[in-house]
Image (cartoon, protein in one colour):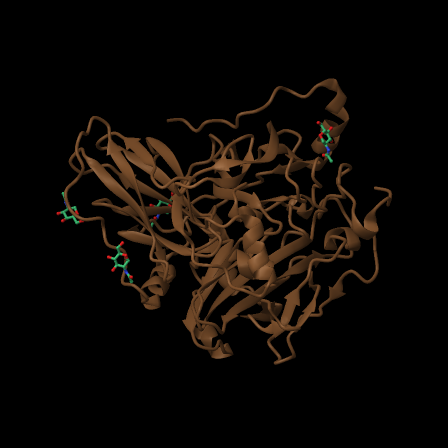
Length: 544
Ligand SMILES: *[C@@H]1O[C@H](CO)[C@@H](O)[C@H](O)[C@H]1NC(C)=O
Ligand SMILES: *[C@@H]1O[C@H](CO)[C@@H](O)[C@H](O)[C@H]1NC(C)=O
Ligand SMILES: *[C@@H]1O[C@H](CO)[C@@H](O)[C@H](O)[C@H]1NC(C)=O
Ligand SMILES: *[C@@H]1O[C@H](CO)[C@@H](O)[C@H](O)[C@H]1NC(C)=O
């Protein structure tokens, strides 16, 4: 099964050639263009057997899958037919020099009901399994998410033989309550209820068909709101082939933990007697204890494989999960999307320019439960940070108003942006002081996850870091009352959201922005504001 190229709408008419010319200036002119028109509506869905109002894209739940190739230019016109402002963010797409297209509240004005916005971005130098999802309010609880697979260009080898086919699995927790009801619960200071189900591709079952003896790539993304999953296939092992756009050492696992916002791709060889085998995802570290079962069907098989569903890893043992996470290693000799070998970059020998320790918490602020980073609970301003910075609008951004380490300050609300210099090499430690597993995501970047640990992080923990072949990825879990440490090379100028991937925590303020910048203004560092940028708040009417 050859990768399906991106489906596209009809070529643009002359009336949009001006827009096109701009796109060519902003993104790679020589690379193919893929056009999409996405109409976002409410519509009935029924994933758990009762009718719900879903958020559909072109009538679909989940949204359409984008299959494209490294460096393709993606032109996605999103038409908002909902009753609320809407944005889509492209999870794991690095938006090189182009945080203008990141689609979060700090970079883009919302697309108002009845309006549209055309995202223009490139899958620059990337290969792998990514997703997109609505970034505002609690919209993603109702749908609007989908898969975004980037295939390699023909000249670029990936470190495994071409699979006979690939399957895309969007797995996530699901709630019977609608997105507005969940938002009201959070706004009233309540906690999210436990999820009512787990879904694979919007369903409670899914069928994957393959031939005996052949090998298939399973792309698994956790698109849920907050629940970690474990993934496994009855009587089949999983050979890890890709982690969020990077190539790991291809270890073989019986099952894999995938946390919210993360993606992995595994190679599965159909080497058992031809039958139907259970494809299982179950919740991890959640009292919800939910399971969803799909089927791996061998062509021609007519019976179910005997035996129980494959068991998941031991219940609440975080050590098991942490050890598995540590076993993820970067393949230093595998080539990347670019023809130069990844391993030529010895990240472990680079001096870090600074350390940021971000401790998350869920404090009461003015009588309401919010979430915070170093005591600051993020509030979205009326004007996106990126626009405020671009137009030098005062009193929007509170520069560097989050302490670089937890300082015991009183819990408060704010709009912090951390100023960092282009090409800094930074250590960030995520400190979890709660009993809940956390997941952190950084837009615009991959980072090396150099360590996971229990308890309070101290400088001594650096001795345990993997400075040789740590896994690079864009979303990292932080175990309860533990820490995770990352190193990141700040080579992508822009305004980048660092956030909890647990969506209730993000919504309640566990996020901030990093502004990566240099005084030397150049289009080789960052593109200028798109001509179709929506202006809002204090940027309304400004020339651009
Ligand atoms: C909205 O869509 C039209 C085409 O239907 C396009 O010309 C226009 O640029 C889009 N608006 C934005 C803000 O991208
Ligand atoms: C790493 O990638 C190389 C190059 O493609 C491949 O030959 C090798 O098998 C991979 N190593 C491991 C341990 O996965
Ligand atoms: C398949 O797995 C089950 C446990 O889930 C085991 O009892 C059985 O022996 C396995 N069958 C084969 C053919 O390996
Ligand atoms: C989870 O549910 C399964 C049945 O679906 C049951 O066998 C198992 O004991 C439950 N585990 C916990 C921790 O409740």
